[in-house]
Length: 466
Ligand SMILES: *Cc1c(COP(=O)(O)O)cnc(C)c1O
Image (tube, rainbow, N blue to C red; front, side):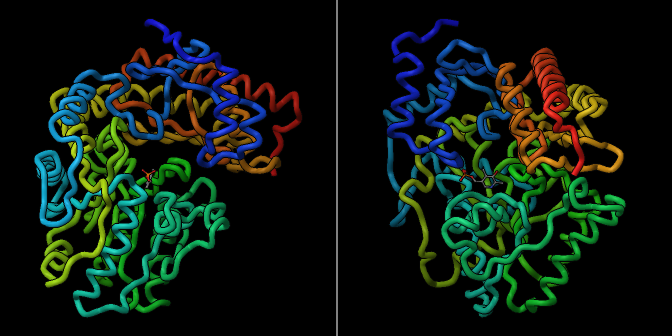
């Protein structure tokens, strides 16, 4: 692969970056001292940095580059659309072909009567839409007091005021006065960390019934909706026990509250089906989508809305007073449509189900034999491993949470593998097109990193249970 040479030396880029570019979810001063890693190009599952390292991207960017990097067909579609119609809005009774064609395609792929798409520029924006949409729905139904949305602790639903309020990340709530009113959180189905002596099945039921208790406490006449990721992503790739989602579905049905599945990560093949809701057996009224919708080639998100909610809000006799300049942006929509075509024509979901998942599953689960690894989880191509000083008791480390995870991530970076840490849990979400031989490279680098991390913990006296 040819190297781009027409950019500044790494040190100069890092200095400019530190001087003028404020990074998301980053301690600026620490990054300025260290210098950012600068990615210059990418192809397939590999990134290239400004020093020429070839890094296997075990996270598909931020869980989004599902068809892999550097596809010319997606680039061509974007270029063509920019020439033909670079922008027009979808306000004021106007539409355009890419927004229409993409909505029709999404409606075709989505299960049941999820037949309507409201576009946003990102997952966060789409969840802001959802907050307004479900409250508007109950208004029109003559139940304006149904406003409360119930979510889970350690959920991730984005970073806008609405998205971060729906999310259950306490470090995010601590900055900027969140959550906004009428959003409450119940416990997460995280058996490894919080299940104590219960079986996973009993624990899953217990956590689902926290939703029922919360509805009873607030009164069903005040609750608008429940929102959850079918599988928590940013929280640590937490796969709920099998008992959890059926019980949540039962409770939502019983009390007549809307179910929102945040499919931003789990949508479009990540779990081996089109949607994580299908994998987990749930029937949401609304799905949040973004990330894999365009494989990250263009920023686009949205809400897929069922007939009942759509028809009620659309038929209210009033405008739905909500929208974004870039709702249904034609270039992003054209790229997303092509991405959905690629997923279908190249049978990428079949590849996940029949090739990549089974092979990675075998090799990922074998990591649980490593002395540092407690459990290894994988659904489709999203996986996690729990690092622990004592597998038998599922013990946490004595060091501050995340210390060991960060050390492990640093070893991964040094070994040219992107694997992320959430506390002391390591997570992966590689491009869906990853091949068995690329999976071998991923596992080889992960194993080397775990070995080096383990040796370092031993010599630094950190292999100690809390
Ligand atoms: C990433 C993510 C979001 C937010 O999407 P953005 O495009 O970053 O705004 C929302 N929900 C889930 C489950 C996500 O993983």
